[in-house]
Amino acid sequence: MTDFAAPGYWMNETSGVLRPVVEAYLDNEPMSAAQIAVMRAYLRQWCAGFADPAVAELASLIDGIISRGTLRAWLDMADGLGIDPL
Image 1 (tube, rainbow, N blue to C red):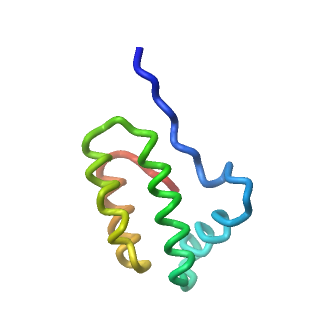
Image 2 (cartoon, one colour):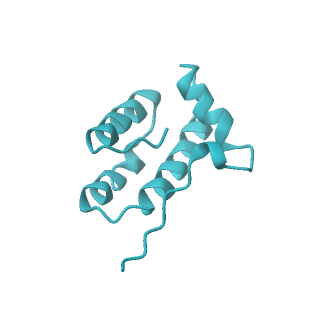
């Protein structure tokens, strides 16, 4: 049997840091560089829960998320793989 760590979901996060960032994205609000950095950290941990090589390739693109536009593009690619971290 293979161990699989399910990715942590943003709505279960308890620090109070991630939720306002995701909500800002979902509400189409402006996002600061610090908020984009929080989102990158979340997406890294999300991807770490998958053993799929395609998800590993997607994870390698996380450092390229530097704006709302690049975040949207990354999330579109994730959707294409059938995963939805939001």
